[in-house]
Image (spheres, rainbow, N blue to C red):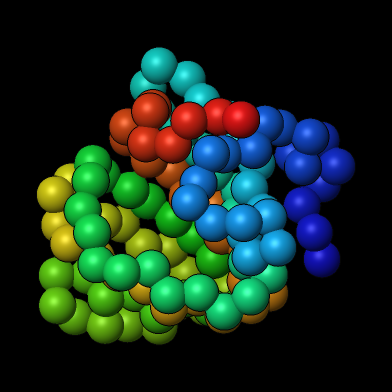
Length: 110
């Protein structure tokens, strides 16, 4: 299942991954950034930190390491990453996530 056509029509994000690995759509306001993510290939995101982030798994699964503790999140699960906490992830191909960032400029829109 894909996101509705109107969501896929939102601008994409300027992320350091090619479109054959990760497809993105996003809405930004002065208060934050909402990203709709579709992972087309297995992906590993190295440990990093930034402002607060909240996400939910729409399809597939994500193995998230947050502050040294690893947990697998599946469809319907949500996660909250406090500002400044180091985290990394392994995400399976076919996964779809909605991530909300407190930093409106976390990623630029294309």
